[in-house]
Length: 197
Image (cartoon, rainbow, N blue to C red; front, side, top):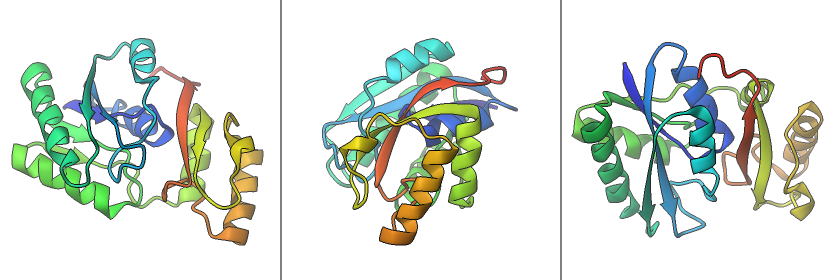
C-alpha cells in the first residue's frame, strides 16, 4: 500500500516508519511545524525533519501551523489531503503509542478523507517499545519537561543505561518512561539498520 508517515523526526514516528516500510511503499513524510511549542497534537522541535528525509531519500511535505488546540487539526487535514493529491497515498501511519487524544483525531481525519490510518505502536508496553526502538535507531533527547528530568538530560542518547535511569524516575516521580506524556522529546540521529527503509 502507498503510505504517508506523520513524521516529526522523533523516535516514535521514525520507528512507525521503520515498521510500515517492511511491507508497504512509503511515498512521503508529512511534518507539521507548530508555532506552539506545547502543542497537544504535534511534536516540537522538528528542525531536523528535512535532513532526516534527505538521508532516508523520502520526499517531505512540511506544513506550518499556529498550533491552536483543535484548529491545528484543519492544518493536518490540509497536509494529508495534499499528500493524497500529490503522492497518491492510500493511508497514513502515526507513531501514536497511548494518546487517545492524538490517535482519535488522526483517525477522524482519515475517515473523512477515506484513507486508512495505521498505528503500528499502539498500546505496546512502553518499556519494551523503548528498548525495541533504541535497538534499531540512535535516539537523542532534545527537550525535557518533567520532574526528575533536568537540562543535563538534553543531548543524552537513549541506551539500556538511560532506560534503566528512566525506569527509576518512573518509580520515584511517576513519569512515563517512553515520554508519552510529554516528559521529553527526541530526535533520531540515525537508523542502525536502514535495509527496510
